[in-house]
Image 1 (spheres, rainbow, N blue to C red):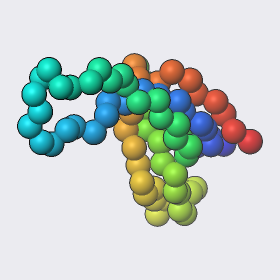
Image 2 (cartoon, rainbow, N blue to C red; image 1 turned 30 degrees about the vertical axis):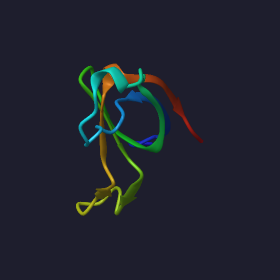
Image 3 (cartoon, one colour; image 1 turned 180 degrees about the horizontal axis):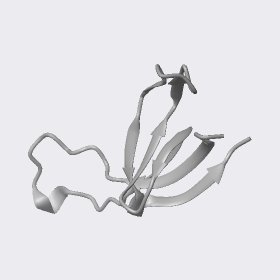
Length: 82
């Protein structure tokens, strides 16, 4: 299959805190562990590209929606799904 269905486990930063906070009051936080499922469109040393939705695959009108670009260095595991 040209675009295999995969489960990608990766690390991401948390959403920024928008309000002002005293530095003394900020709690320590780590990276978020994320799981994403979709069709693997690209994987190289810089970026891993995943799309949950594909249409018209194999035609001149092939399309993808919901595309996410994950820095490859953030990927901790990639599993092919059947």
